[in-house]
Length: 209
Image (cartoon, rainbow, N blue to C red; front, side, top):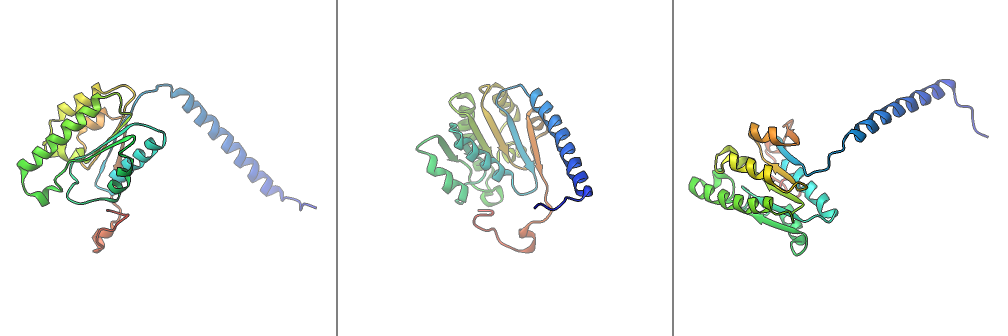
C-alpha cells in the first residue's frame, strides 16, 4: 500500500509541473520562430582556455553527422597536439587537416617567416571557403594572424561573406577584430577565472596538448 503524499509535496509538484509547462511553451515558441536554414559563422575569442577545444568539439560533431570538413591551423605547428593526432585518423575520409603555423610568434622571432606562413595558410583556407564541397571549416587561431595584421582583414571578411550558403565556419583565437565579431552569427568570449599555469603547473597532455 502506498503511503499518502503530504499535501505540501503535492503542491510543490504541481507548481513544478506548471513552471515546466510554461517554460516549454516559451521554448517551443522560440524554436518555431527560428526558420532560417543556412551555414553559420562562429567566433571563439577571449583570453580564457577553451577556444580551440570548442572548435574541435564542433568538428567532432560535424564528422559524426557525415559532413565534409576542413581544418587549417594558423599559429600552432611547432609541436604535435592530441587533437591533431586524433583527427588525422579521419584524413582518408571526410577530413582535410592542415597545420600551417610555424609555432608561437615569441618562439619563431621572425616576422617575415610568420607572415609567409600565415599567408600560405590563408590561401589554403580561402580555397576551402570557396568550395561548396566543404560543409564545415575550422580556422584555428586565425584571430591571432588578424590581430598581428599578417592577413588583410577585408580579404577575410570578403571570403566569409561569399562562401557557400550552407557552409559552417568556426574561427578561434584571442582578440577577434570588431568587424569579425559583427559579421559572426555566434560569438563566445572565454574568460580566465583560474589557470593551472598560473600556479606553476606545466601544460599537460589531454588538457593543453
